[in-house]
Length: 86
Image: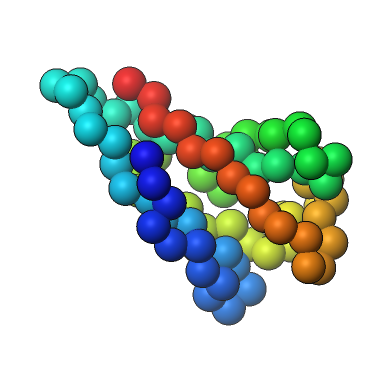
């Protein structure tokens, strides 16, 4: 899977990605993990990006990144991992 867009839209961050090759399977949903400020721990964001979604985009309010558990500050790099569930 490849992230095709990571854009700030108003007070949100919109992440868009391409669906993986299905090899005859069906995507049941996607899991989005965001790296915390410790730069090693990733946490699933199932509130803004439910794991049952089959759309290839997710909208996250910017204030989520500065809140627990992420605790990122202005200027920090936002690192994400997206995985397909099938």
